[in-house]
Image (cartoon, rainbow over all chains, first blue to last red; front, side, top):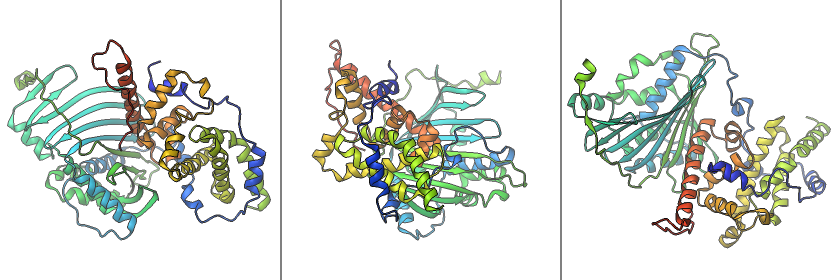
Length: 322
Length: 182
């Protein structure tokens, strides 16, 4: 029994079969004998009731396809990369200010890890991918950890890219190649790579500064809304993202609302950020997409050792030409 | 909802969930704090009966309330008491636990509070990712990512303990657990 969850399950201090140690009738009487008027501090002890949608693991919503998926996916890509500055929107509430402050604290780090999870649902399938990135100054490593789909199952993937001192290394899990063609680096730079964690975190700052209706739903957990149009504004403010914008964004989606959740760690920096969207199709059909992006920051300020692969082979582009 | 129908509905919710909420609290609190935590959880439901969802979702809603009640209890305890409350040292049926269970619970206690709670909900309350998302008020995808990483962290701690306790191990690292500073 090596699975840590199985071992934890076996160590359950109170198994389901364990007999009760309390007098339930006495508890019931004490509760129902109390003043039924809501206490002022009750609100801190519960959140909005979970809805059918929030607990739904499967796919019971209406079909969703086509450009809605493309538009929201593009918004998420831009949201995830999020370079450049957007015009600052004053943080009008303490919750909004705290949310921006958390994002700014994250931006100050130059080392750490970021896990990016993207999940899209259409009428019959769920597609997901997890990308794990490590940052150490300008050195960078990104590993596509897994991809999943209802039709595919969970596919472990070991595709990894490392950028060390400006050199690019790529692995398919079996072997490493070094890409020393300057045109490749130029092409990557045109799309925003290589990233550093401060640049990536700047996206978070931009997103939360654009957020509206921000509230602190529980200590350290902030929730607000942004629109696809606002995310487009963030993207359009940075030349490297113009590549994404014209082809993939549909102006009819500009008003689509995305819910942004931000959870801070004990130091006040961003720990986890999620974007959720369930837009309806712009053409009035009942097509719909569920989309979720998760950005999970870890080990900020902790040095990441990104090693240069010792056995990397030069990439021979003539091989591909043949 | 009329008073009578509210009373009946609360009775149904109470009867259906009190054992589960009691078990939840017993897994996380010292025995003398359990009764108050269960009472407070249902007191919120009694006062906010119109906010309690129907059916199975009522259970998740109550877990969400109980989680905050337990957090309040732990926050209000002073440091020494909190140490005393650690499950590994004060489980009501500790006699049934093997040394292996102690190791797992010790390892769990080194993780962050968020990781611990997520793994407990997964392993002890046996909730799905979607159900945990409802309890923690985060997205199912976020639960998936966090569960993946928390499981890896727990496995890493357990591996380190196994290595350090192996007499043939060269590293002989300390078996002392250190709390996750996060």
